[in-house]
Image 1 (cartoon, rainbow, N blue to C red):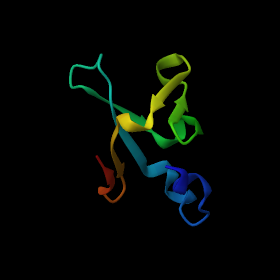
Image 2 (tube, rainbow, N blue to C red):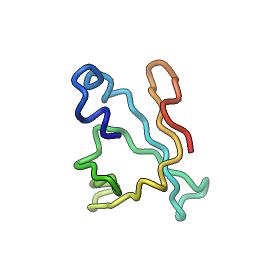
Image 3 (cartoon, helix red, strand yellow):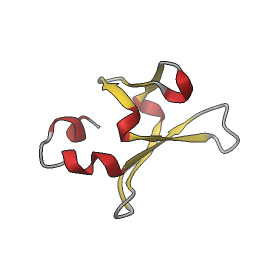
Length: 77
């Protein structure tokens, strides 16, 4: 995730990044977050205003990262 934040060559791709993460309250067990919704990235968390409140998503809950333009899987856990 930090690669897309800091690497100038990858910044244009930020608008195409989809992040699927484990969410216990979801019927499918997963929720979707778009890269632009992230307020801050730390070593341990994605910090976002997900669904109207500040939310800390632990990195170990990130399951897949996909480029929606190319459908390329960038990360899968």
